[in-house]
Length: 414
Ligand SMILES: Cc1ncc(COP(=O)(O)O)c(C=O)c1O
Image 1 (cartoon, protein in one colour):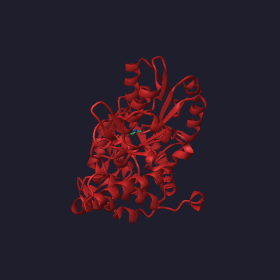
Image 2 (cartoon, helix red, strand yellow; image 1 turned 30 degrees about the vertical axis):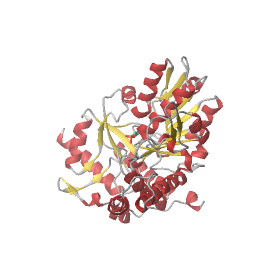
Image 3 (cartoon, helix red, strand yellow; image 1 turned 135 degrees about the vertical axis):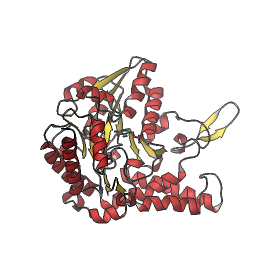
Image 4 (cartoon, helix red, strand yellow; image 1 turned 90 degrees about the vertical axis):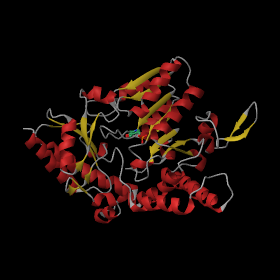
């Protein structure tokens, strides 16, 4: 409660000590890592947990009864409890481990289509979706003769409310990102879910960009599905999760078939395993799921509300300082309360890749390209943007390095 009222500032110097990669030099300069929307760096707590797992506990899970198997199974399943608590799901059965958010969104889309969407039905997404939350719906709609509706984005980088209301009418599913990976826009997931549920839609929330940066409460949002990726929230690559409401997960068919997801197999029929294992076919990415737990603990110890406030402070300053640069075009809302600290921009007519290359030579790592959101790029009328995205170990000194490196770009290319 107190945390909600007054955020505690993060001890950035202490946090940086936990991230070995931040100590390295790039092209002889201090690494300023501003590509967090692509993937975050990993603290020692995560790195050590994974190597300790391989050194001391490596085993397959859920099958053998020997000591190592019990240890591995215990740690794997306790990460599920940890993540349940982190997103405040009601039941542990509602947390399915996947290899990333993309796989989680594909499972949701496939299973929803198989159970609930018929020929002629309507599926709604938005123009600001990442390809992972766009292509599955587009392709499944084509295949099943459903209509894909795409909610437009305003010039301010927000969802067009009247378009949204019109498109939700008679739709079966609404899938949207809680935070855009291009515009940084925060969509009010709770309000949008209510809007969609009132019209009888199932709701899928893509939380790949939101879960690392803000408190997430799936019961409060009340969405039917919520997808996230561990690697964007201090955890290892190769791990994601699909939260699904228990009654919905019980109704939908499994996605992958094989070992682990069955209870009984006979010559003519198979009985599915209980939740959540019905959706976890084959040997899981055991080491990395176990390595996800210390990442969740790390974020929890800092406090998600404190992380959100820290990034809002940087975002506000970044919008102010970057706007002062001649020729700078920033995309997305200019109000830091409406967006996360992921800032896409173009600098005059300099190509985004040239900006990123010159910044790299200054030790500043950003992303350039279409950010897996080509529908949004088409809307913006550009082939690419540069994107600086901040996280818990970034501070105003990093913003200063970014702005000086941008000045260098102008100097070199004038
Ligand atoms: C909004 C959004 N959704 C989904 C994804 C896909 O995440 P992953 O590549 O980890 O599956 C990303 C990755 O950048 C993203 O930004």
